Length: 151
Image (tube, rainbow, N blue to C red; front, side, top):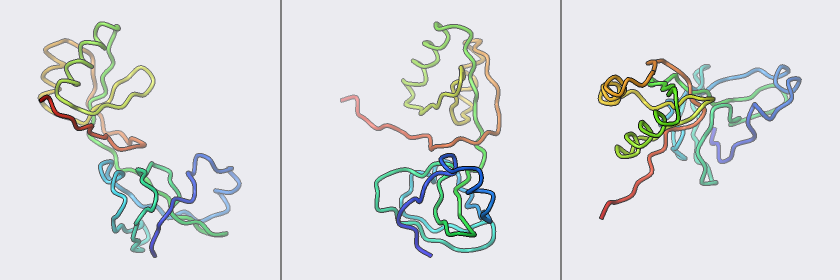
């Protein structure tokens, strides 16, 4: 089976539409969400080729295939994350500046900043006394690096 477009996202579907279908899942690591061309295997052992025509990243919940009885949905494997919970705007600015200097991509959820685990960042957080937790957590989209040069 070759998938060239995303049908929808499960979050945009009515509950009745979802429960009447058998769901197969494709588990991806978050960094594979940026790959438009890849070969994957569902949790039922079915091999699928993905070659998206649209230049977009995959997102957790994307429906790769759907008919009246079945659907195949993207799920994400939990990442090893540092979940940072600054107590003030000053702490947020300090850590955001430090992480930006290191070109580390971050995601935000509620009042938290999440970055992929890095022991140097963990040391920095301890040094700056900024609260954080190391957690295994699923993210909906890839941590995307933004490239640029300094010269």
